[in-house]
Image (spheres, rainbow, N blue to C red):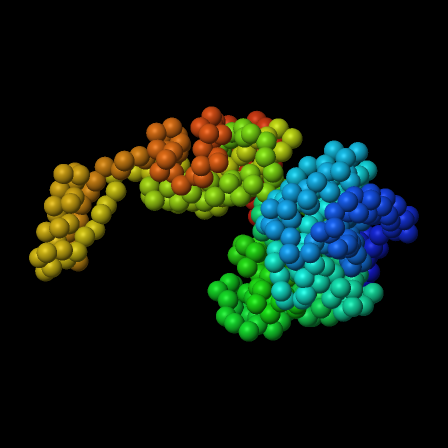
Length: 444
């Protein structure tokens, strides 16, 4: 396909860029090698990730270096020594801690992020930490992917990236680089993946599973028959992948591989968006994102329980300003001041009596409807969503479901409707929340 030949030219790194990355890798390996000689617990180092596998994209070429520990090392020493090696090796590049299951050290060297990740030097299948599989992933893919398949992975990654569903981090919950590799391995090339995904069925298993999983689809890790890679992917991202694949097959275009402009949001829709902003004390991106995701879900649940319809929700974390934005798109931010409660029919003596006793004082009026059910018209506790969320955070934050680590930060909040926003980045986030991607959801 001519389009894919065009894309391949974009996604395959140039010789000059390959040389540039190799100099950075060689430099870091030397720095780390000098540090690990101080620790007999360390058995060696290994390059991992997309760079080692030859599937990296020119614009996204992080370097992962795994520091391998003896299996006898305690979790405490594993974490502390891993951090010490990382900070000492990368001291000239302003290193900082990131968190997955265990802490690891990251730094930016020129234009490249470098991650120093501790893992145990285990036999395949005898994992002690989640990072232990990574070096086996690297070996497996280097052996299994041909050179042409590596470029097919790059094309698929670009497709996922430009459809905003790429990235395993908690902020995105999308398709990881490794998942892209697994899909190419299963279906042969980019078109094979797109055809398979466009026609995928609920519960379909990609790979070999030895047990059942309760996810919309199942993507098995080829080196771990108990691990479902799709468990970390959100349902909406899976759905967006399916629709993007169908749209591409219907009308193949370079647009699917290029950044797309977000349409300007209509004021008629943005006025139904609640925008909650607050500052947070700086912490690891993984930690703040975990707390923000939980807060977004908890607040959306509270809004829904009050009778409002939450159509969509999203969040934005701006690390440069230590700011959080929570967005909730509602069907309407105002409801009728009264609502109807329908109880049991009058034949059930005990049930109908209990309903009457529980609701009589709250009722504006009570009657038997045409279906024979006891009905009660009641005043709604709160008919304005803006006031509902404001009261929740000011008066009932202990019952909000927001994690303890975020409660102090979120107490100092600002809450407005979307049509009152002036910030460019928040306007863009709202526009993304309320717009339709015409490339994917096209009828032509």
